[in-house]
Image (cartoon, rainbow, N blue to C red; front, side, top):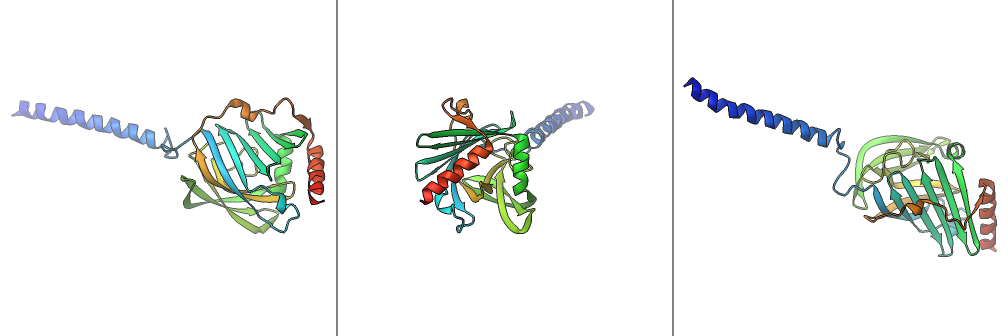
Length: 243
């Protein structure tokens, strides 16, 4: 009888050990090995199409604002491209690895680029400094699970708006050079202010498509100018549009 019990219980012990090992592996996959953040739709490379609305429609430049934007991202880098009336193109390239944000403008025979370092960006972002408060609320945007963040402007706390981001796209440090640097994920609904005009971006479509490395480089035929020269260029272009 004791021999029978030995042979009967040994497989049970082995099975329990196998189940224990399986449980440990499962926990690793769901937590430390993935954090539960990634899904089968997760991408570190692809394309996002955004709809754009102007926050203050009474702004003198509101009529010249683009209505959509396309973002190409690859790991922590991204390129955001907008077009106004199909003739005025603005592109931003964020590269956290070398701590630069590049703005390119293409209009008729004008092809200019301004490359800003992190120190310049920290000063500029200080003018749009935000208080960001994580919440437990979520919603789906463009098919992705997004977390809600309550945002308010530090210089004017009465200005409040909601921000949504997802952990399923890009890398955690993709916002390092923006006012949203504390958010570790791709922004799917947010606001940004550049040259006095505040815009709201909302993701509409996400595409799983390869992105070439040269998407994050300034073409050789662009003229490199300073931030002040870029501001003067915008001022002159908008003055010409008004006339």
